[in-house]
Image (cartoon, rainbow, N blue to C red; front, side, top):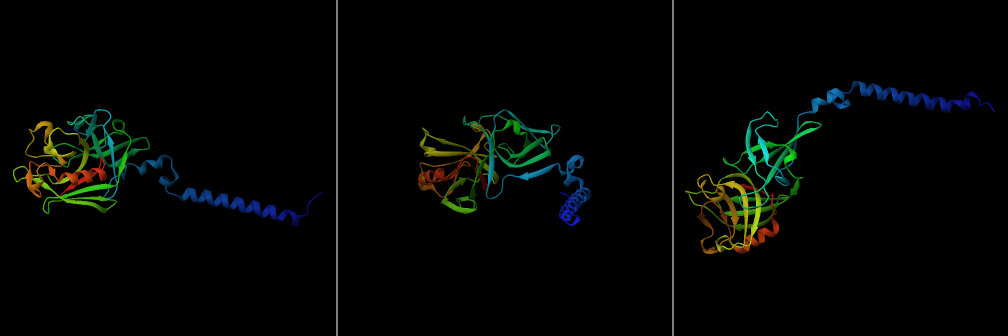
Length: 257
């Protein structure tokens, strides 16, 4: 049975509304900047930097293949250093990953903190050299003035103790570093029950075995703490280093003031 014009009106109105909406969408897309529509203009989005480490959260990765580190995120960048897969302590080498730089949709670099001299060096490495990223929520602060070590988790203090630091002729270096490894079962009680290796290196004892890396460890001489008593390492009582070891994972950023 044929429908009257009045019966057809709702369908006609709906069709007009739909056509209007489509037209409005097309106009909107055409007036958007090319970077928002995609296509050739998408290149304007690059390079872009995504921060991965801050005062509360940090990311680190293991060095899985001998890694070439460059001064800028480009294969034409000057080579800063080459990182081995292992440390001088025979542990897995790791780097603190500060940010990711996306050069294009298919090419990225990591900006990393480096365990080399001079201290506080950073560089760029391709992700293919590294493991997947691991996340930590801790940050260790060592104050050479007050002779204290403070561990924070998500910005809140969860541990604090008095420490020993370097003597005037072999100072504990100042700067931004990270915890590289965790060592146990020493035969030498001088280091206490646990030691953490850091990316910090002594600026004066460069001829020491292993390159003069600064450690955070216990001691068999608790009576000398706190004080300026070491060759650059950060010493604390054995009970304190045991407590710290339960709270602080490898990859934790370290700030020495």
